[in-house]
Image (cartoon, rainbow, N blue to C red; front, side, top):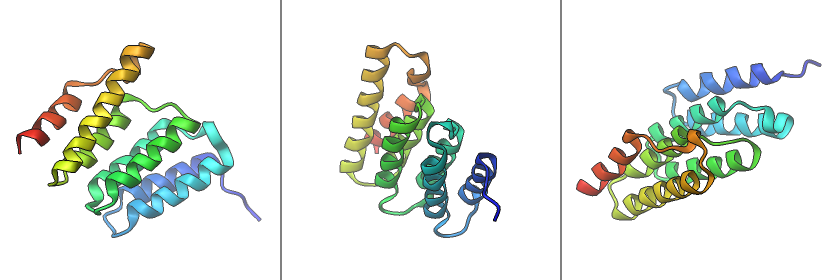
Amino acid sequence: GLTPTLPIYCDLVKLLAKSKEKGAAERADEILREAVAKFGGEVPVETYNIVLIAWAKSGFDDAPQAAEQLLVLMDEKSTPVASSFTTLIDAYAQRPFWEDTIQAERVLDNLVEQFLNGGKEELKPSIATWTIVLSAWSR
């Protein structure tokens, strides 16, 4: 039989993640994990980020935790960038509970620490990253 290539997996993940159907984020996450199992570190950062965005927009109660688990996998197999963390921060910050705002700030603190200790420019928090956390605290 035919075996899907990495570009096929990435396209499928992108289509699912951008779908408005209920459960799309979860399905995109599953397919991404299959791709990671097959191709490891070859999976592009953008593919992870698309699924992180899908989780953040999904509205599911456990979306921030699912996004964070994906970021952990991304950290093991690839190299997250500031926008990856910003999406996770946004997933927490959208929730109406103080505990989630605290989690958003925790992720920001982690990002800042990694940037300051590693000096990697791709981990530099953007103004948007800071604004998301400040907006969450102001509610």
